[in-house]
Image 1 (cartoon, protein in one colour):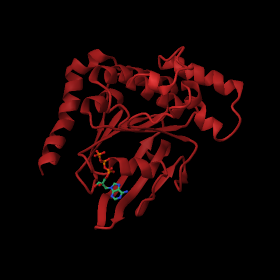
Image 2: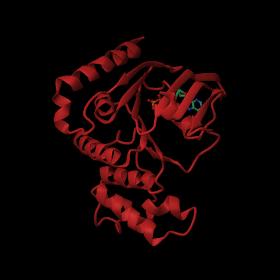
Image 3: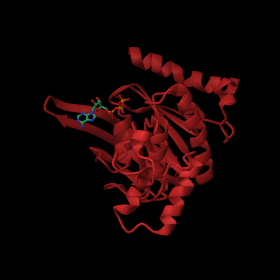
Image 4: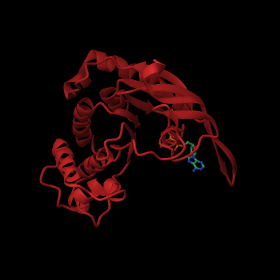
Length: 257
Ligand SMILES: Nc1ncnc2c1ncn2[C@@H]1O[C@H](COP(=O)(O)OP(=O)(O)OP(=O)(O)O)[C@@H](O)[C@H]1O
């Protein structure tokens, strides 16, 4: 498996130093993520999911262990990694198009090709003709789709998503999940998604990592052998239910431990 691993996490530990003392957040997490996989990370609140994602993205350093992305150690944020966080963080004074092009604009001059790519992404996420609007004129779901376009504009090989759809109502979230599955099939990006939703994890992923309570470690690693095209009907199927039922007991058990 490690041959086509794009992300290698080896015995990673994270302890935060706080005024109140040391907070062990993660204990010895090891995993390899294959190129093109869609991996969800689930686990109880505070178990270190965001910490793990931030370390893979080079936003914070591990206390011990190592992380490699495409064969080189992660020592800081990288251009081949795109981020989407909970609650779209768009610049309110910039239009949709300007927000999407922001990662390019901070690095170099925006070209006609970049603009064409931005329009293409907006189209694929159902935002045709919204390029001149401002974030305040959009619904939460639309804003989140703009932030996905922004994460994809630089064509990163890897996308890190931290509970990006958590603030959306159930129906919008389901629609975005279907759209996001289409995007993933079309682009074959490697995706790491932190989510509190078992349904979302099973629906979107090729693999789900279950973490224990803090200090988090991986307690299960589940292959999601469902057809790649995920449609809402799938949620009611016995296969889907069996996978969700395999994950659910961890939550009940881990929450009351
Ligand atoms: N900068 C920090 N300084 C000190 N402690 C921190 C810091 N960031 C996170 N922690 C602590 O580390 C632990 C793991 O936090 P983290 O945000 O990674 O968990 P999580 O699984 O993503 O949580 P949630 O599901 O609630 O978002 C928590 O106990 C948290 O309070």
